[in-house]
Image (spheres, helix red, strand yellow):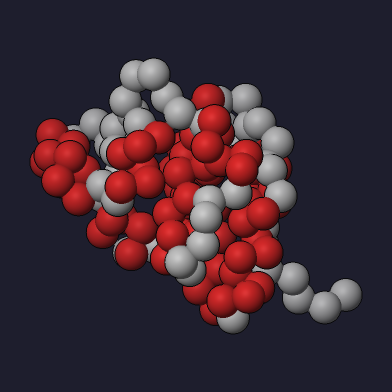
Length: 126
């Protein structure tokens, strides 16, 4: 079987089976690493299909924010499925006050729109 990069659908499946938040973040970073190595046309394909729910609304919304953020970098519209995934109460994945302040300042627009406050640096460090 030939290598296939992880899609958001694949990522959601991994997240739903993994209760440990640290490992969940490692899975997100693994997705981003695989995504970055793909050509732009293939990158867009990794975002299109709606991922199943993970069992945690925050992570479901994070997937929508991630899809919108990555689509914008490709100068594309976000997938239709991503638009409805929005938190009513903002989520700061880090409990450290300094990381929360950084997220308030540096969260990408797509993440803010969805209610997920995560610094762009955290995405770049992946």
